[in-house]
Image (cartoon, rainbow, N blue to C red; front, top):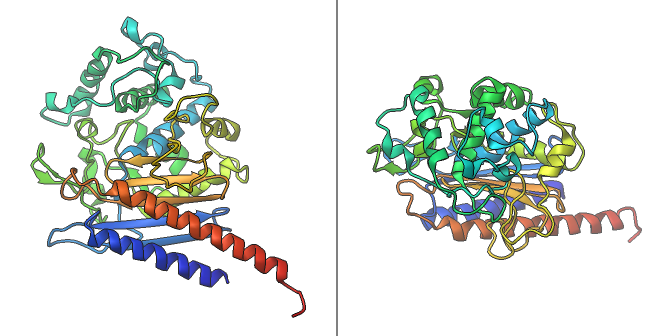
Length: 391
């Protein structure tokens, strides 16, 4: 029965991915599904399509590396914050000045770590800081961009509203680096990815060090009008690019095995089956809960939660679920009630970031997976109930 169920899930997902290819939702995609404990539950990997529409392209497989875009926020920056919390180098009440180790404008003095993590700091969603720079010298660009972020007027008082903000996670990235005493990518590699054996599956691609990934097959992203080339193996996010490819809001790359494995471990830690080695399990679980009584659209700490209607996680996703989206066409959702997670990696921005067909595709895929997992669980329970009975 298990083998038949696995085959049915793989056939269903592959069919949906091929429909996405035919409708030009993306050139290629990879899906990872984990149900139950990592290594002891059920895991599926399904891939379809190619890395680009260019003549020189490869078929997407489990080793294809995608620009994870804003999945950097939960899977790198937020996990780094959890490590620093365990090390007692900060607290959720830490103010912005203490996090950055410098004076901040008066309107930002009340911003706390908690507000940055749940996008309630009052900062704008996005600014095109990169247009002020003509090179990617991280040592020079970082301090200049930090000053630009701090100079941005707040759109509302801290704690008043939830507005998803790249600027807040830029600040978190710099705070992690100052408090950890090393670059963000080095910190998460040593503390999180290396102990899990994921360094070859999850990594940043610093601009000056791209040669180190010469044998890696990347899924191409957009034909960038600013850089005037098709991007492949360099971060799509322009602000992250001028910061040398390493930033708190974007810069992480990964393949479907790496992302699914990490998300599966986080699900295990959430369910209490696994004790994290780099941070505290109880603190992680507190991060994954959306505060009660918050407005629609409110977020957990570092993670997104399903919208009441129109969630990218589908109409069937449990309200207690958490996940995140990435601008390039990536996402993951963890459903604790089903004890399952779904990872979707695509390069929907290739060749143009104007392609938004992924918005309709994501919920269709998730509802199909949730429904099939529910059906499989019901069948397993019926089979268990009748096992051993006489005909």
